[in-house]
Length: 338
Picture 1 (tube, rainbow, N blue to C red):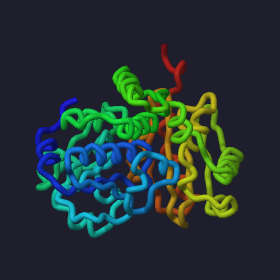
Picture 2: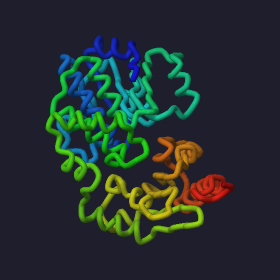
Picture 3: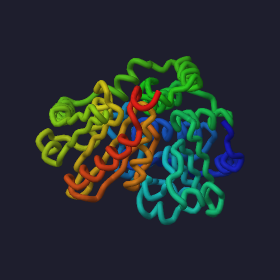
Picture 4: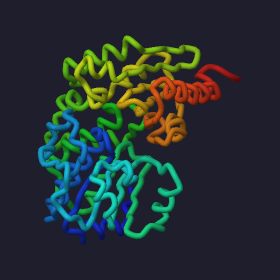
């Protein structure tokens, strides 16, 4: 993994560093940010993690998660975005988005638009961009970065990095899991990480209210076996009746993906009227990131998402139409000419 030299120089020269990720951060985003912050502190830097909309409760157990701030206390000379390459999606206050002059991006998502391509090619002053689409998680990149900075590994840093790995690989059963990913995970366990406890906390544990919400989602699930499409919807009424929020739906879409014969799973969540969040998961090589990009989103070929600013009915119709079109043009395994 080749780390840009200008990124290493910038991290070494910066004294006050704010680290942030995307809105609605998951385990890779939070784990990577916390691990990097702890590593930079060991180099004598003033570093803090910002989640402007608040830390999801699921990750409150991670080391130094209690130090995450909604507002930065620093006037940073460097803003680092992990698992995110777009200031518009960054979970930081608007004034920091507007005033950030020096920005470093560490991400494993491929770029989505011309603006990002401009940044990647170095045409935007003050930006340093490091993207590794082949990395299973941004956490893999943080490990390489901390090693290059000669930061000693600790149990606390290893715990956050292991959480990042299992979050984006589905505890090593998604197609992005590589031999390198497993070797890295094994090396982190050497520092006393508890793999059973982390897998439970990151991927499984949920409140009883969230379990009731899951039941509602499963009860409304639809399956189209000829296409291999499984989908469901959660409405504002579902959230109100169970006393839950969108934060409680993490990993729900994987239950739809687990239905035998599913190639694409989709979960629609009504956050507000005309604000629908959509999560995609896929199997058999179907690229759902391409579908998400049609609606202004993005992600990975097997896991992506977007936001649609239409009524719930209109959003469902539009997205399902695009997915069905994609599936019809991509025959199921065993179909077509031999």
